[in-house]
Image 1: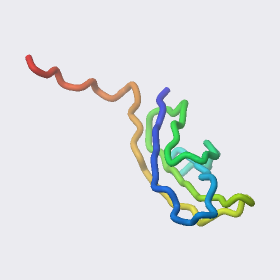
Image 2: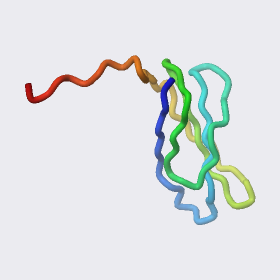
Image 3: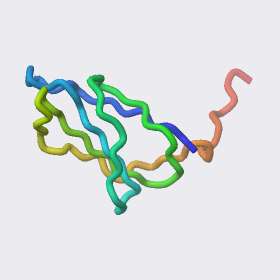
Image 4: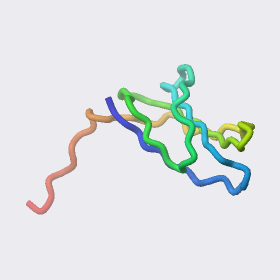
Length: 88
């Protein structure tokens, strides 16, 4: 299993206090991952394959913005080949 780190720019809206993040295997059902005040998140326990991600901002009352999507991202995890030998 693999971890995914995502990062994003903070909303310029001063009312924003949190960001809500969901993921899904491409074409599958959305899974809530995290609600955070940070502009990055480490999402744990991903398998290999293609995944979609979405994020939205929340104000202090929980009112959400529109979703922003990042689709069809390949997660290779431990199956990715190692880096090349260097300075040999």
